[in-house]
Image 1 (cartoon, rainbow, N blue to C red):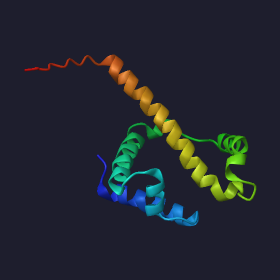
Image 2 (image 1 turned 180 degrees about the vertical axis):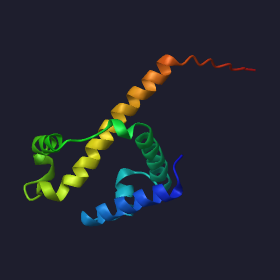
Image 3 (image 1 turned 90 degrees about the vertical axis):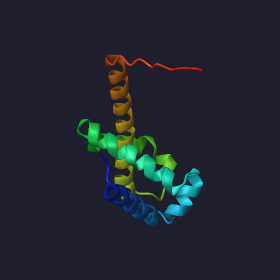
Image 4 (image 1 turned 180 degrees about the horizontal axis):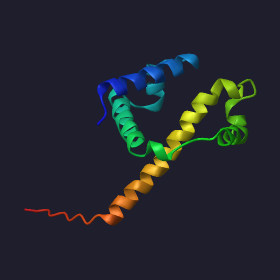
Length: 121
């Protein structure tokens, strides 16, 4: 289960990260076209996935450096690696969590025999 405290802590972390980038949460949500309730639901799923499979996901410094070097143009000349290192690591972890979660779902679906009985009257 995911507590409201966990969700609110993540929202606070995101808010502080956005402030460091010169924007605020409301503006970021507007740009993404989602509401605060959507964000909370997404965070609940994200935190649940982290609890289920987080121990299978890690990012090495080499992976982080390679990702930065391959995507340097996206961040601009003035952005230094150390300034965005934590943000990049979070992004890579989320990517890996998504992949691991998808693999877990596929595994569970292949091992499960679920029958749906629907009465169409």
